Length: 473
Ligand SMILES: Cc1cc2nc3c(=O)[nH]c(=O)nc-3n(C[C@H](O)[C@H](O)[C@H](O)COP(=O)(O)OP(=O)(O)OC[C@H]3O[C@@H](n4cnc5c(N)ncnc54)[C@H](O)[C@@H]3O)c2cc1C
Image (cartoon, rainbow, N blue to C red; front, side, top):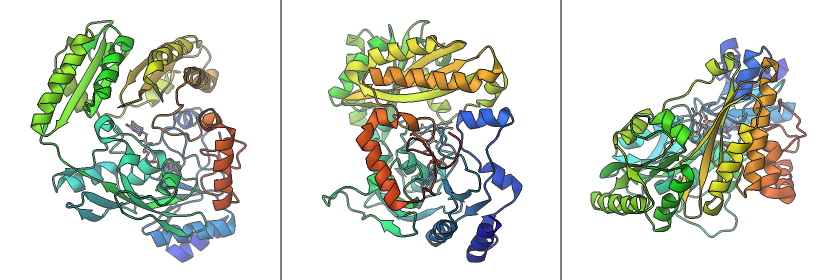
């Protein structure tokens, strides 16, 4: 195993191949709760043999080629903010970090495009285009923790998605290095009819099919005006209908967030009476459009029984929209928690909500089960479900966590929902992928993986259901 570190150093230089213990330890895992819990319980996963801080596509090519020759697993690492166990380094593995593969390569204000190196931090990318009065319009809560390459690799979604779309709607082209070191580049055209879209192989690929090295995103002008609006409803089930109606009518507030009564009480105690469900909206665009949309959406909400609430609630959300919650203090007190984002058609939202919350409430030790909808589409919406549970016995924390996930995904599938809206599969959902894409879909992905990476060396254990050749499940 020392050989691979020596050969990487010989090819790439000492500076690129890090073996200092803090660096190794910091790249063992992402932000998955289970990895945090295992650290806390004194059973952490192994450190990587080395962290390659690639500075160029050529460095990525060399790393993949050398590791393939030596049959050493390689785990791509962006910002490490993934929450599904997409980064859990297997014994004897190497981490390929995109941290140094960072920066803006081209900005074309006329065409509204920007090309970034894949490791560019999300907030930095936004700041770089803001200078030209432009925006990416992709604003995940984790914008300051994640990378543009990570957004593509996880099919991420931003808080403004209802108007601006998700990362797949912004991705114009990409460069990726395949597991054998070949470079693939798609073309930067606004649309193409040239057979299957190869960008889709990498959107949501979670480091399994290649390493994304460059990403071109389509941009927008910064909006001329923005205006908040808030209503409260009898319940989430009641409030979801006006949301459906406004989207069906063609209105597109970028931010449309409907919280159940538990979350409304937690986040908006000043603006939302106890037991009611809070809806916050943010309108953006040319000022004339914002005014018209504000009035039309307001009318739809009032007709559906919505009561206008203090718009300060929207400002409060806006100011806190990138706060990063710390899960560790909960784990230290014996409480397991997580968020599970799922999606479903409008006709099944109320059922899914009831079934999932009901299922979670049956878990021994459950303290809280709640949800909100935060990304809406013509044909449906997402539910972002939160659970907290304290098992009687601390040794049961991981089992309780798994049980909460199992029940939520069972309820989601039974209600005709999709198992992930935007966090991805990683390890936590990989054995449920079959519920989403069926046996044939899994077989197709396996064939693709085998064709590209026959020895299963690139991020083994992620995305595809077990059995796995590497990494703890
Ligand atoms: C507090 C918090 C809030 C969050 N909010 C959101 C949100 O609003 N919306 C949302 O979508 N997600 C959210 N997430 C999840 C996470 O931020 C996203 O999944 C993000 O896109 C991951 O990017 P990253 O650069 O950190 O990737 P990493 O965590 O480093 O990696 C994620 C996966 O992608 C692979 N990967 C990373 N970079 C590359 C690359 N260049 N080429 C190939 N594979 C690669 C990794 O191997 C891994 O499997 C949140 C996470 C946290 C902790």
